[in-house]
Length: 365
Picture 1 (tube, rainbow, N blue to C red):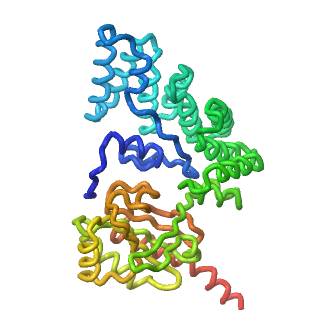
Picture 2 (picture 1 turned 30 degrees about the vertical axis):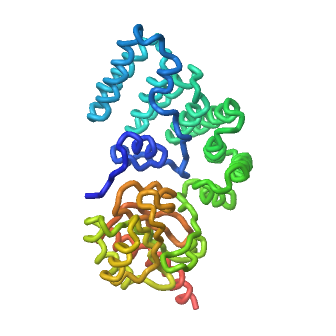
Picture 3 (picture 1 turned 120 degrees about the vertical axis):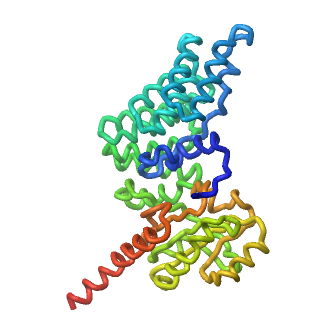
């Protein structure tokens, strides 16, 4: 069981972009493709609705659809969104946006793309964002024609927004590379880095600019902070080691249950080739310090006292703990969410692979 106190509806929207939605774990945004934040629900209804006394049926259908979604009745919810759209003569961008989001979570990509396209072609206030998420959806289909289609749509997102949807440059760079236009893709990624050098996707973009073969890798977002003890703690400086990011809090019972296993991993592997960086989500420094002492935790920790707003937690899109991110010596994420024996086994596998070249070299001599 994981602690998760984030709002369920807003969390589902965030996690569509992060690829972490529980009901859609099959969705992996290769290269960490991102979607711009969509306009709040209801925005379109407010701007496009007829006077309230003529709009009761439409609003009721929209409300019913949202309730059905929260109940997990997906097909019924989609039918209600479609009914709401019909009541607006199929001119409800919000309705098609929501249908697209549902199908994207379920990885029904053809249906998601069709819905997002319908939303975008109605030219709503977030038209550019609709083209951006349509481009991401097409990219996820993973075939040559879809990559080419994604390029066209993402260029449209940039054109419509006059370059203000910066994430579209990132997504376009990947789509161009996957469609065989590597040089063009690299140039677009350079443009993205120029516009937003501090973006959470910047590490991924830089890695692909340096080596286009990294386009299918999942590069860990970089960070440079001070540890709880005041020491410099930068992911870039840990290159060459296997790194385990362990997200936890002293008030989290499952985290407490897992801590002895984490300590065993540290005792077995900690050293020049492996390290753990704890990311603590406590907001009470005294509680954090007491638990560190109680459990004899000696590996580096990042604590900023912000709880769920912890800087690194937000960077990695962590909304439930305990959570782990396992990063290889090249800064590529190899696994997330592993615990206990599964985590130890995966670390052992990576450590063996890291040591294998040295062993082969000695044999040649």
